[in-house]
Length: 382
Image 1 (cartoon, rainbow, N blue to C red):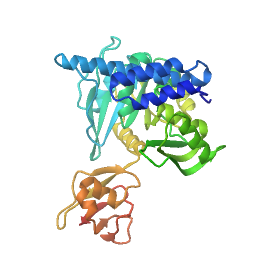
Image 2 (cartoon, rainbow, N blue to C red; image 1 turned 60 degrees about the vertical axis):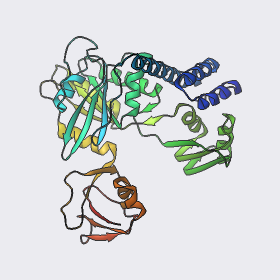
Image 3 (cartoon, rainbow, N blue to C red; image 1 turned 135 degrees about the vertical axis):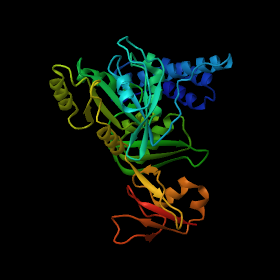
Image 4 (tube, helix red, strand yellow; image 1 turned 180 degrees about the vertical axis):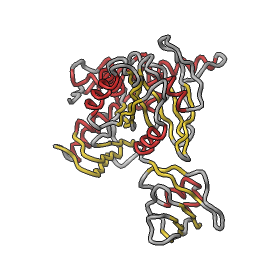
């Protein structure tokens, strides 16, 4: 549903882009929120702005605490092939799941809200390591500002639902809260990027198609929000409302799995079936139990597929391939790998040799645009 913001609100939104400090951003967002009319079309936007305000308040408080002599931080530095955040309500079994998957030793208790800060651990899948982070239990959008920021920065999410309760209602509540924070668990039909520039006016690039609007309509919309120079990339199928939503909320897509915990309880299988029917194959559902744990191989394989990544093994001339793979996005080229290894390799690239079972012979000499697949071995000549 369109937001239909008045010119006053659009002008105040433009000021949020000009803010340079968290304090300035906070004041600008508060003014923007006060100018947003309350109706059904603005409910998601208002919820998202409230979340941003809560995040900034926590950030400012943390900065002040550190200046006074330290204070714990809520952020977790990424490690391994990907960072995956465990989300769920209290007593859903997130801590037990983290213990069964990783080397971490979180406190497991029947007491509500035992986990107060993120707890990381490393999960091995084949020759990869995934960083699994247990987030504090969700309890309401504004109170969950730090947890939702953790989720927004992660590479993927695992939503843990409790089969002792109503898993469909839990999933619906969690997905709704994520959506209000601008986090999507299903791949959108379109993505939009708006990059501010210093000159050149507003340029719209469409890789896909626009629905019921033109490039001129998109440029006019962007200009109405105070942007004079910007590069707008629309990928997929997008309407004008989609473009406006991306402009205001900056939604992000996070590959997501569901772990249905406590499968060993009476009646859990029936609830699992209802959950699978509600999801309708759009998300992977993996059953788990505090007693028997979870199928780590299935979970690791599902994460690997959802993240859309591949493993590439590099080698030096006359030496065996590396044992530790380089993890890149599916569709990456030889030049992408060279850039990831060292910028000098990509600048001075000549050619590469690739070993792969899918090739008619190995090694095969290839150019920079050769697309790699999982398990390929690459030797770069520069």
